[in-house]
Length: 140
Image (cartoon, rainbow, N blue to C red; front, side, top):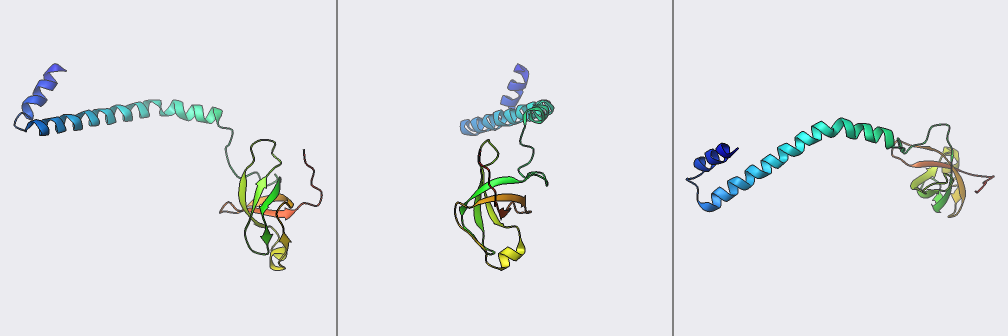
């Protein structure tokens, strides 16, 4: 190691002091980057295993046969977007943009005001919740 440092010093001896300092700084940064990449490659399988064993949120979109209970925090009127807060999971509440599930209701200009209890039927490809008004809402 000492020979390597002496060799580098002899190679950059022609540079002014500021230039030598800059070269050493770049070499230290390069060494730190190499060490970081090596640790990342060596520890990546363990991190992947840890995430797989501990991650409970595998998807933000529920299964197709799962209906979620929600409450509107912004009104939905016809084809306009509103906002729904999921309230039926028993865990943390999440808020999603929402629109009506039934196209006929949207075309007829159905109005669901703030506070309306709804069922979240599905999510579209953009993550917008598709909702219908819940006639028999059962709260915990």
